[in-house]
Length: 325
Ligand SMILES: NC(=O)c1ccc[n+]([C@@H]2O[C@H](COP(=O)([O-])OP(=O)(O)OC[C@H]3O[C@@H](n4cnc5c(N)ncnc54)[C@H](OP(=O)(O)O)[C@@H]3O)[C@@H](O)[C@H]2O)c1
Image (cartoon, rainbow, N blue to C red; front, side, top):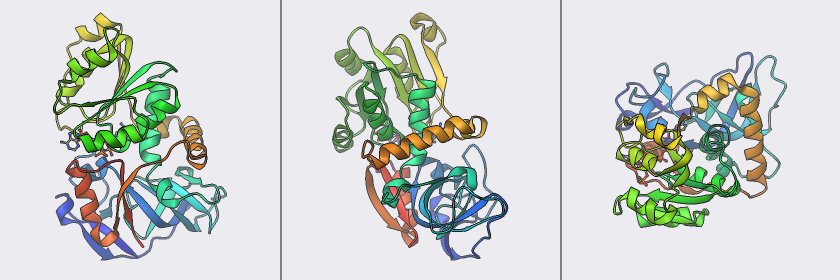
């Protein structure tokens, strides 16, 4: 099979498409023919050795995929060959076939669009866990989403609307904000032009926002935290701006507010039943057309490095896919 291999932790430019042996599924594993794989910012970090864990070299990156089950290992009864599925993996989705743990593979309803499914789970599962389990976002509350046109950001915009919140989307360009509006944002802020704190005073008034969804970090985090309402929740999701911000601890005190961590991988490991319930809910919403992942670009495996570069260089809107073919 063909695989977009990372042989050295030196970044996107050194990835190469190579022919490698197709793996055999071991006990509890499923081998999937990959129809499409979603690109996520953590892929960029993984091939630089900067992610929370390191994959054994050489490896293909890629955390999420959809496709057709080719073979199942011993003891797997939840899916069977020929079935259309999506999966979350620790790496390996940027290849023609990928091994997945059976408990991380979910069947798709008949007729499900494999490309939409491929670009859905990692981002929407993160944002749903963040808004529902960690942020306890309630109907009628105000939600601010930073980096709102990115993968997890746009998922948070859609899910926030679906959960009945008033959604304020903040992003760096008018084109990105237009995508946020298409996906339901009520208000938008171009935070590279307008001061975030001032814009939030204008939009959310003296009360402030109830929940901040923050996958960006940098200077935006403190400005957003300072704009929280009484009992507000600031969800720490990621740090694409590069800097991990530090927060003066008097701010949560003054607002009775919470700084809440979000970590999808650990949630799936420590609370597998709740994580699968969330996954099932998302697949149901996808099938019903209540969520619709935005695919901004598709690349064949041979041009997979371009897909990763689009995400790394802040150009992606919604999801970029790799189509192994
Ligand atoms: N905690 C978890 O469980 C979890 C799970 C999945 C992902 N994450 C994290 O969430 C973050 C976003 O992931 P994603 O896949 O959604 O990424 P993405 O699609 O690339 O979106 C990230 C957004 O960050 C903004 N950004 C600001 N400064 C940037 C910079 N210097 N370079 C690149 N982007 C920049 C961009 O929006 P603007 O241009 O509009 O500013 C971009 O749209 C990452 O840090 C990732 O590790 C966390």
